[in-house]
Length: 112
Length: 113
Image 1 (cartoon, chains in turn orange, green):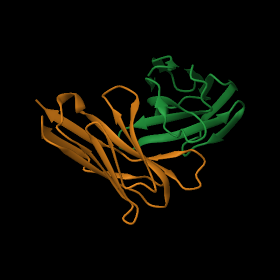
Image 2: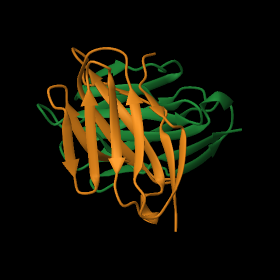
Image 3: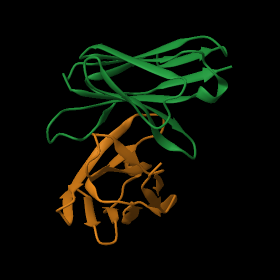
Image 4: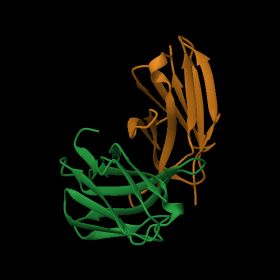
């Protein structure tokens, strides 16, 4: 099946540093979404960027989208220990019937 | 997790037995989804529903069936559980129109022995 791919698979940083994770996808999309999953919990929607947008901000989150490279990045600034989680990108492909295609996730550890 | 619950939260069952997982929402959202999450595979869609009595298959639907007789409830049935169906199952909901974000339940951890 088609899937987005995140990199890196795992990331470990110190509190206060910035964390960047990337997502690549395969075909034309309607939008791309980022989700967070804390250990043992359900996923939480963070931010959505549409195919005609290039950058969006939400608090300490910044998402960029480059449709020519079929890639997106999620930047978390001034990270906190509470940001420790897995982060997933999900794409809604153009013409797709409301089914998201999920990446395998980036596991982020923020050390105090 | 507000507005969406899953039951049971944990279940251990034996190979060959039928199992039904329930997803209940209070948000009146049109779309409901069942996923399974396994290490190395990420989230995989089992079935989804786009309205009462309207369902469609996802990428890993074999061995699973679903029913949606009312807006708020979406049931996932494992007709004859196998060890390969040991997983964490998540339900998600999404509204219609431009509201395409999905909201997830807390998950059900199912172990098939």
